[in-house]
Image (spheres, rainbow, N blue to C red):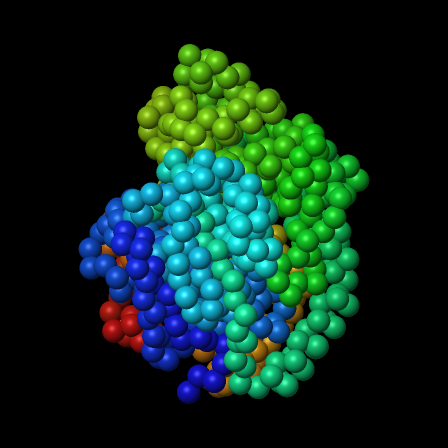
Length: 601
C-alpha cells in the first residue's frame, strides 16, 4: 500500500467545455509506471487505439510530476510534459525543472491532463484540489517571460507557471514551454500542442503537505546526499559555470557541432565557453527546487538578462551557427526564450539554412533578403523571429529541418541533421559510435538526454563498434529516463556521480513501497517499450533508427580526428544488435516475449 509521495489524483481539464474532473489513480498503475514521463506515456498509450495527428483535438497533453517531486530529495523539481509530437508525429515528451512540479503536488495532484481545444485563448488555474479556466486574450501574443510576469502580478508571486510564447501560438513545430523565467521544456514541440489547444499557460498554487511514509529516513538520506554533493570536487565548477563547462571539453574532444555539423571543433570556442561567460556575461546563479549546485547561470549582454546560456544553446546556437562571441549567444538565447523556441532545434535549423545559403542552394530571394551566412548574428535573430511568427522563409523552417530539406531539395537532405524528424542536439558523432547509436535509437528522435554515451566512446575507444557499446546505450536508456519518471534531475548522478542506489532508498522511504534499483530500471524499460508501441502505432517505419548521410559521407575535415566518419556497415550491425539485445525483432518491433517479460501483456 502506498503511504506517501503520490497524491493518486489526476486533474483532467477539458478546454472545449471548460469542465474538469478528478481522476483517482490505481496504486498498481502508479507503481508500475513510476510517474512523470512514465505516466505520460502510459496515459497516451491507453487513450487511443489508432494513429492521431498532433493537432487533433483528441491529442492529450499530460503534465506530470514524479513520486519524489517536491520532497526532500536532491534536485526534486522536475516536470514531464507528454503528447503526440508535432515535430515527429510520434510520441513526444519534454522535461523542465523549477518549481511547477512541487507546487502541482502541493495543490493535490500528481498530474494534469489537458483535453480538447478552447474556443478562445485560455489559461488554467489550479489551487488545492480545484481547477478553473480563465480568459487569456490579453496574454495572447505576449512573449513567454512577459506572460509569466503578468500572471505573477495577477495570481500572486507564489504561483508556479508554465507558458508559451508566439512560437507556440503560431504552431511552430519546435515551440517549447517556458517556466521560472528561463527554464524550458524544449524538445518535441510541446509548446505547439499548447498553442493548438489555445492554452496560453497553466498556473498552480498549492498549500497542502505531501505525505511521506518515513520522513526520518528521507531526512537522513538527504543529509548524506547533500554532504556528498557539496563536498565533491566538481561542485565548485558546476556552481560557477553549470553545463557551460562542457564547451571547452567538447571542443578538445572534437565533438562540438560547428557550421551545421560540418566541423567538430570551433576556432572561436574560447569566445563562447564557460570561461568567457564567467568573465564577461555572468551576473548570478540560479537553481531549481532543492538544488545546491545551481547550474543555471544568469547572464547579461546587450541590455538583456537571461537564465543561460547552457551547453546545448552555446553549441547549437553558438558554434553550430558560428556566432563570434558569448554576448551574441546570450542575445540569441534571449530571443529563443522570449519567442518560445527550442534553442537546440532552432540552432540546428538556422545552421542548415546558413549552409544552404553558402552553398547557393537558396539566395536572398528565398530568404526575404536575409544574408544567411555563418556568424551573422543580426540575420540569425531576424530569422528566429520569422520562424516564431511563420513569416516568409521562416514559415518553411517552422516545420522543422526534415520538412525544410525536402522542400529545398538539391541534395540538402543529406546534411539536414535530424533523426525521426527531431533535430540532433549538441554532439558531433562521427567519431562516437555509441553516441551515434544513442541518437539513432532514441525514442523521441535525436536527443542527448536519453543516453549521453559519448563519454563511454572516449573511455573505451572512438573507433570501436563493439557489443559493449550497444549494451551501454541500452543501460543508459533505462537509467536516464528513470530520473524523468521519478521527478528528479539527473545531474547529481551525471555531474558528481551520486550513487544510483540512493534513488530506490528515497522511493521506499517516501512511498513505503519496498523496491530495488533493478525494479526501477525494469519499469523504466517497460516505459521505453510502451513509447515504442505508441510510435509504431503512429506510423514509425522500419529503418527510422538511422542517421543523416553527413555522419557517414563527410569525414571530420580538420583537427586531431581529421578523416573520422561513421562506417555504415559497422553501424548497421550495431543497430541490429541493439534490436536483438532489446528483445525486439529485426524490424525493431517489441516481441510478445519481451512485452510479457515486462508485464505488458
